[in-house]
Length: 168
Picture (cartoon, rainbow, N blue to C red):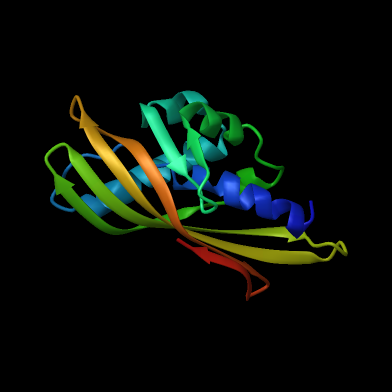
């Protein structure tokens, strides 16, 4: 798959990487949310829609960097369309900030991932992808579920050189 063809997937599909898992309010909510993001990423890479379904609200929606909004069903469907090789990626999420107010939490996060793929000439290239998102979580029955995720910034680098960057 060429880099140009992958751009659409990255903008529309990476939003799934910004989907978060459940978390419990602890003394260090950042660490707890990071652990749940890792759990969610693991479910996504395994294409485990059942597990992912337990981590988001029934009315979950995400807005990708292009401004397109996707509901829970669309995210689940996109997960099944990940191109070959994506399952070997190991996304890492860093929680940038957490603000809890009652049963709602605002979490800013950054997901980073790297993949090696053939470029247009067939030579191997390294793509580094970073997505910054603003997420809204709700506590339902003592469990934090992701209700909304909005991508704020997407950066793609090819062999160390930024080839695409958009911030909203």
